[in-house]
Length: 259
Image (cartoon, rainbow, N blue to C red):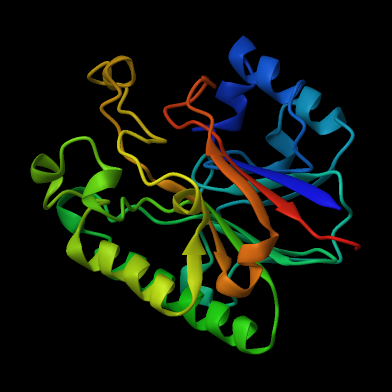
């Protein structure tokens, strides 16, 4: 069987749901599992049109209203849904959904932004390390794992429009990039780079400088899988022609033969 996943930081689900570009995509997507980040709405404030759609839906919202949050829409019924990492001091912002499906465990994550002058870098590093500890343990147990979302990290110089200009900026700090190195060293694979090692592949563009028109962007959105799943990865793409947010969707197609 084939399963297609999509991940998209929608920069506010109430705002994006007012845009034709969003509905043109949503009503025509062939995705089985759709992951949203930066939902910025409590579950009771999700637009009615998005409540009525025929998907299994789950959300994790921040304690602070109108902030952060993730949501997953799925045609496949989850086996189990866990909200957060299980670490109290890291879980108040509604950043993690851990969803168990028959063939894999899915993490839908809106990673913290390290902020202006790296004011939240310590929090981000703690969050990332707690996640990695959990991922490594699940991998040891033989689980298949998909980790998607807005990582708020551009990993390598190829993942930003102007690497020299980006040095020292939030999202491209040495500590953040080193964590993605650790993730890969622990046996997890950036699925997009399995298929495309080229430049100018971005998923986020600043609204301020007409950056999208110039493709002056950053690649912040990823699908990672444990290396044991590599043979199940059929495709991974960036849907840069889909508008509605300052991010664009990314996709992953998995194939589980004879299952």
